[in-house]
Each structure stands twice: as structure tokens, then as C-alpha cells.
Image (cartoon, rainbow, N blue to C red; front, side, top):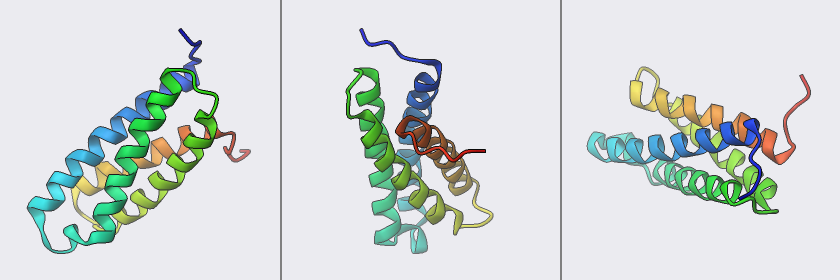
Length: 117
């Protein structure tokens, strides 16, 4: 069993929550139609969800390449957050953008990309 630090545990939790919320948001977008179902937006949600799940899996098993994967995950989450933020006033889209932003920060930390404060 690999040693999991508190920061890594928090990142795993953020990734799993982001995965869940992105999948919920995908379903929500299909129900809403219109701009919500633009191809690029849906692909960003799918990429983010899948990369979050994969990053959580890699960290949970102590893979040596989790830092690289977390860097890619942070990029996907950032793009997804920006896309969701374009739907101002929509509570589901705001919730998705918010968890994506939390995931960006924790994945950047795991990737060693966290900006110095």
C-alpha cells in the first residue's frame, strides 16, 4: 500500500468530486440543449471527467508518473472551468467550474506546478 500524504489525499478527493460533477454536468447539458451541447464544451467536460478519474487512480496506487498526469489533468480542468464559466447565472455550471478550479490547484501542487505565493 503506497503512502498517501494529506495533500495527495485531498487531490484524490478533489479529482473524484470533479469527475462526479463533470458527469452530472454532462447530463444536465444534454437536458438543456442549445449552447450547452456545443461539441467543444461537451468534449471539455468529458476530458476533464476522464482525466480526473485517471489521476485519482494513479495517485491511489502510487504510480511514479502521477505528477505528469496531474499536470495534464490540471490543464483539462482549467479549460473545463473556463468553458463552464461562460454560462453565467447557471448554478450547475458554476458548481462545475468551482470544483474544476479546486482540482486545478491540487493537481498543480501534485505536479509540482503550484505557483509560489
